[in-house]
Length: 274
Image (cartoon, rainbow, N blue to C red):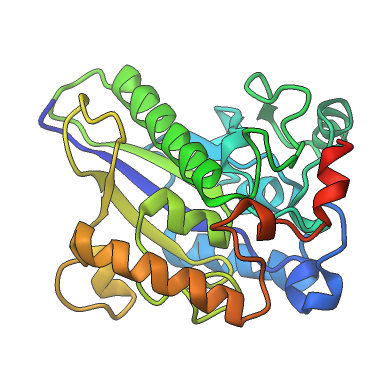
């Protein structure tokens, strides 16, 4: 197909945990009133015409689903939000642990959010260090690859015209977005991320459908819109930036997720009992 799959990635708006590290313990926190206003402003600034969106996807966490429902309110009149559990935030702070599926379904119905939870299994919010949702960096990278591959597969299936661009929205989290995009540039400007709340960036797939990693590259227009000149760093440069990021996040007081022994905010013995 000569048309492109264009991913409009959006970080969730301000949640209560974003008010300070003393709120990191809050379980799956909601958006603040200011965060809700950020969504309205982002919709007006970037997403007034939503007719082009073929798929709206989101992390299954409350703040991302709420952000999605407020920004893409027009698009979800005709389609459900696809909840992708691998798009959850990376750490095992309370704020980054999602809600059990039964309660999550109840919450989406109560809020009148049309959400497809078919991909969200029991245990998706289990952050055991040895499991697939571990905060250890290798598991984070694997989850991000899964999300990229899901979106690529969905985009290809939605294509009816090989020359048509397929627009997909993904609402997720600040730290996760660095793994998703494999872009580590300026990734320590905020706490555990270089993405501002409710920021959006656009990506296309770097290679063809046979790329098992489904790597993305940010569009030139997207980089320019956020004040970045020139092409994105090369893969080799990104590897160096990644290592710098890991050190920078530790300097911010976050766990060192490169190593099993230091990746969790909980003691190792707690994980051995999970």
